[in-house]
Image (cartoon, rainbow, N blue to C red; front, side):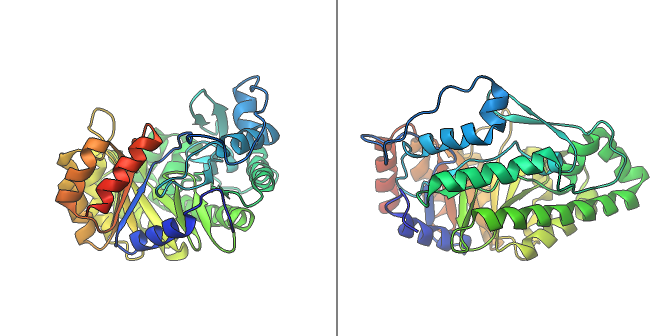
Length: 353
């Protein structure tokens, strides 16, 4: 597969090293425009008439993504991945919740008539949208870039999108058996959706995941349990860990998204997942971003447990101190780049180690 990323084979090696706790991946979560001419002369679509068209019109969105991809920089290890996500947690919509397009994201709205049953309906409009959007994007890409897997999410977070967080937290106490049954059914739905999406987007078995922009030669996913900030360590081990383990055992390469200082108490449990490859750290609101010195100890703990690390929104000034203190093995550093010049400066720092 020959993409618009000229050094893709080099970056693939960097990613494979990173999955195996070696080397450094230097990238950014989102994209910035390249200097000079675009990769291909692609006409910009007419502006979206509203947020519904911007997010939920497969034809318009595939044209928009194709236009943007033709202008992005893919220097260093920045991946040529079209961001097709339909909100963080779109599996919830596939199972009956609703989606609402906003200017900068998509909100998942509770399923108001949730009756406790987890039903994967092939005729669900949001599921049909997933399939149509991915197919349209794949057609437009023509192998010039990868189509990313939408951020389905799983487990307790999806259950919360169906019946609300308060109801989930209450049911952990008063109806744990039903909750465990629902979580088992959610995992079944997750694998069904994931496998169908993989069939569409994979390129010779390889795939990329939208959220945090990750790649691998097989099935790849980001996992999470953001509601964990509101539950005990015992409940995390009962209601989250078994289903995360099932995903890690099924998917070839997995990254756990650890979100917020209050989620850190679950890190020991997360690190017990034998087939988990890496942990991403999001400090949360009011905290310094991933390049700050206060997180060095956290990164060292993750690395010592045999998992790789993803640090996000690292600035150029923070890059060398991060490498000096944490080392240059098993790090995926998602930089806060503002220009291609900054990418070149960061590459020089990486090369000096």
